[in-house]
Image 1 (cartoon, helix red, strand yellow):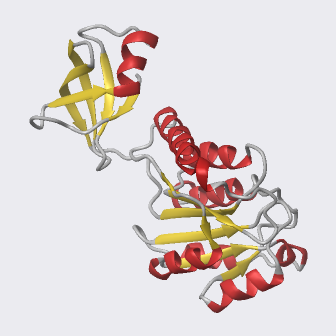
Image 2 (image 1 turned 60 degrees about the vertical axis):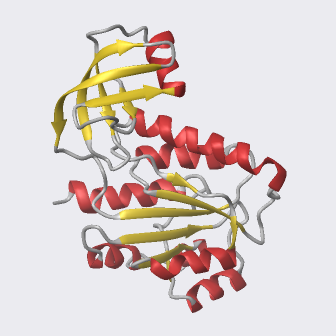
Length: 249
């Protein structure tokens, strides 16, 4: 059953869908009155709905049943990625959304090859948010992750002040054989708490950046004995979180 994110309008028993989702329902899926779909409120509440009316601009749906189940991770995981080149960030956002990330914060690292173009900022972030939305629908998420505009490392440190657990995935720790920090951190986290993990760009984080992060309460961790690419490491982390909180219990 197709899944769409929309706010409930008028009353508790009706949902109105417009914009690109309207086009997808009417033009792509060619749904008609009586067809069923799943609608998700911005709060994450989910309902099975039946299409009651289709106008030139919107699809009006009647709520059949509100659902209590959720597909969200028990903790809120934020992925902070040093700006990588090419379409690697799009891959991180798409697959990271499928794996349960709560939000994404790109940041400009010392070794980021890509330089952020402020003139193209709105279109870039709009595209990233659309990728997150489509991935959230495909993977039956209850929320759409937030994708932030790229920030400086200093701004990232400000954001981190309200996070319960802060980690830096650092390849030098993997080379040294560090394997316990991530496991201990996950064991210490409780439901509804937050985790922020920082990943470097292709060239990795500099020693100065790692030291600065440590000074602001970040713990340095390895991700196993193999050195992972910048687009692979966040997916490894999210898989580990899912295993710890969802599969091993």
